[in-house]
Image (cartoon, rainbow, N blue to C red):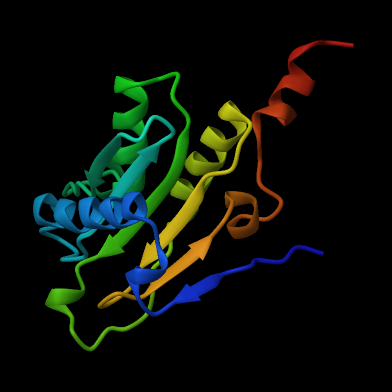
Length: 164
């Protein structure tokens, strides 16, 4: 049986100073999101084990498959700069200011979930996912395997790469 454990918090006060800096970085990255077609601005910030934080935001394109989600922009950017430093966490948020009546917490799409899972696999350690809601609400998932049960990993590909 697969289960997803989500911790819900009403306020940032429950988190460390480093986590609050991560949340602020994600929110700050919203202002550079390029979403002229959907108006769905998304931002993410990745917290690496060395304490550094890298931001990303969604980048749309008129040819929709050519755009890129905020989570992937942030993770790929962090990995391009520091490929040997493991991500500790990723904070994701949407622009609630433009939609004050929207109070749901938004989670990563399937493609982003798979990318986060790949980095967990690469570094052999969990990545904490912080989903920032409106105001100071936060949902926390401690590992991608809880948010993406039965995930596909490189171990499957490796088992097929050697002919028997």
